[in-house]
Length: 397
Image 1 (cartoon, helix red, strand yellow):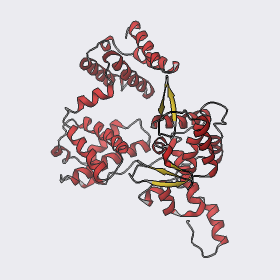
Image 2 (tube, rainbow, N blue to C red; image 1 turned 60 degrees about the vertical axis):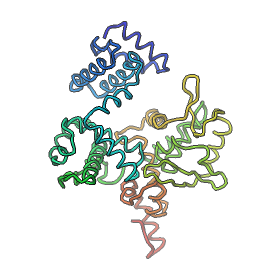
Image 3 (cartoon, rainbow, N blue to C red; image 1 turned 90 degrees about the vertical axis):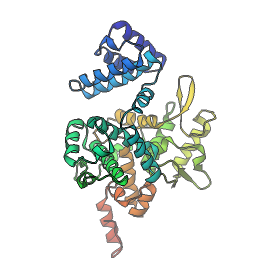
């Protein structure tokens, strides 16, 4: 793209408050694309963006493609005044699979009682699969077999981690169960699609933070700078209570019961409210944050961020960013070292305290104990010492 258009784009990003490094990355990404993008017609620009992405994807690194996609969304908004996601959604409502995805969304949220956020994620996975197939009618889908999925997985997921592949395959399995529920004949091999096994370091033992990594994360925000206390609370809610990022982002001031010493979680993944005990030390930190540090705004959400000249609730992306930045600055790396590692670590601590698997599942918000067993890493040495202290007593081992 020509330099004048790139400079205009850079200036646009600056007015939106983007960091200099991000502006540089997105502007460099646009240098790769052609001048055909320089149009105000949303239909034409949308086609050029899609064509460019399909052409470049086989030849460029994943990180470069990520920057091009992100830059494309912002460039589309600059040129057309329309949010790219909204335009794509409006365009796709005319596609052959829009009705199928809508039916799946209703089935998942109203029948299975899955949260809208989780269902939207599954819909994105399924949508990519349906785009790959091309011919997407209920009748054509009922003719699929496991080898069709295998071919898709081998082509589309070659750069993903095994755990990410597992999430995609889970979405596809749920989709085929939905088709079966609708009364369409589904090959049995599709319902039994194997999940890609997570590449745990020790077989099926879940990977959790080491004691040193956990300590560094707990101490990462020493409350010396603005937002340190807020960000430390976010990390501790996940490390001590096993909360999900989405649950932290959804916390409201009214969810805290100071008299009972509890936090009540709403809009959880399984659509069931749950109440968690609030440790006194963590409760004291939250109290200081609310009384002394939280902006005095008429917003019920607990965690607030400043954006340009206004205050907004912290969303899911903001919470994840707090965790990821802490991981990065503490040099804690590894493909599994993300926000969910805090929840797995908390799950292991809770279980190994001796409260039992069922109560651990309840605290984590798991409907199935099988889900909890995939989270906890058993401290066998501690459990053996417990068994010695109480001969004949029940053990979690």
